[in-house]
Length: 167
Image 1 (cartoon, rainbow, N blue to C red):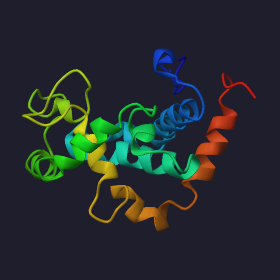
Image 2 (image 1 turned 60 degrees about the vertical axis):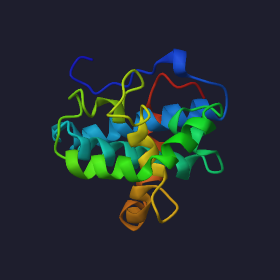
Image 3 (image 1 turned 45 degrees about the vertical axis):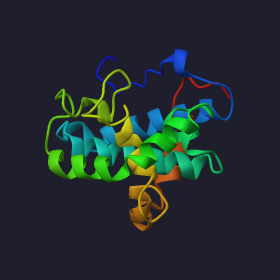
Image 4 (image 1 turned 120 degrees about the vertical axis):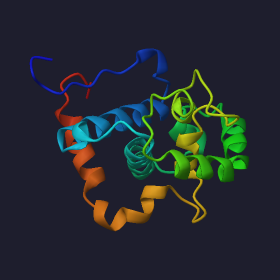
């Protein structure tokens, strides 16, 4: 708005605590990431995996102890969807490797991130699940945590600076 980056939250997705905080943290991270270069990234599968993986990793840092459903759907009602995605991990990984540079809006991959479509026979939004289901037991980008040590503090500062958040 007026040349400034803005964060718009879909209030219909804002659940009760602690899931409201996860949604706000996730959105704030995306805003901060865009302000620091991600706005110029391609809108392909690889870039979205990195951006969403980073948001999930930071949300886990800021709001520890929730189920995967809490970070992926900002509620505790989708554990069966997480299990379904976990069972599809090999197929999701294969697709990601094949389509890493494909535009995320292409119909054959859109379902990796969109709730209203499927990518091949994979569960919708399975790209998000892939981020939390790496063979190492954590988010894909948590592996690079050493280089992200200041990120949770930066997100907290950015959240504090957002005028629309109540204190």
